[in-house]
Image (cartoon, rainbow, N blue to C red; front, side):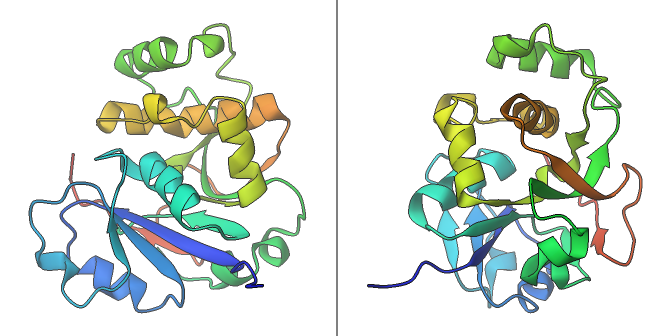
Length: 215
């Protein structure tokens, strides 16, 4: 009987730049999920690349793709514009966060309505009508959709109908909205979310986020 690998780092990408090669160079077990790239230059020298089986569905679609095709104990969802500086995020998040429950997120959007536009509210209400009466000031969103969770925790998102192919984001508005959907879904499921940093902290001892101006 083969043992289940302990961790997989998921890196969604679209028309990657040279940052992708630099990021994967520091990872031992990773999966690059291509969200419909038209420029393949940035994939040169990069291994473990798969097309997203759900089409271009951003970070959340890449997570569902990895869940369905790569059973592991824990997933770390980042992307090709986030450089991990503290290896404990990958290797031992429980020790880093000092918590042994819940999911571990890089950065919080507090409160979750911070930065939301009307188009985001419209997308959430149309896609997740069960959240129509939810107080978006009562929880934090997961910025960049970047977090670490166990297979069982992701399975609960699927079991309760949050993470389904029909509800995956198909554009930037949907992807940004999912940052709040994750916070809302984990709140509804009673799963704590632990954060490393706040909303505007993009360059810190734990990670560095670059903004690549992509849609």
